[in-house]
Length: 244
Image (cartoon, rainbow, N blue to C red; front, side, top):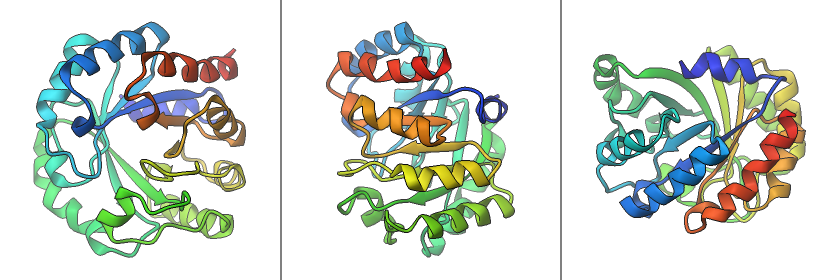
């Protein structure tokens, strides 16, 4: 089960997740990268993206044929759901005010999810401004929380916890110029009892180190490792340093 694992991390260990966007990966690329992921002990594989035109089932089945790393859906829409995964982050975009991403898409997805057998992880998804407009802000038609407003971010995360969500995901968005700042992560990680996931704009080891130091339980990397096997190996070292 994924959620108990995430809860076990809080304040004790750090985890490293690799986000695979099906539209940006082919079979050969995924196969070669999974060898590195297994060798270095990637903890979780997230699958999803803002668009995703490719068959998500096919991508997940390929991943699961090559590794035992748990696969978690990170869906941008109900079209990206698959019963082949182990779990799904049921994302509620609590930083925005677009009802479709707060509850509308969830209503559409609920019958499928009920029958899927997937572990459902209700997730407070918070989009943080990363220096430029990203695909997720454009597609969701929402404004990200300004990166210099940690008080707004904290209040939003607290509201998500009070509403019964089970984890908080702070995302600068794919292709962001800057990652989520430390002074936004720290108060959230300190004031809520939920696992905190950080993604978007992470390009360097220092970005991962800063996120972990600030209190992140899980750091997610995506774009930066899409075309480089060695990059994944370089970045995951930061998790190991915190866990020793």
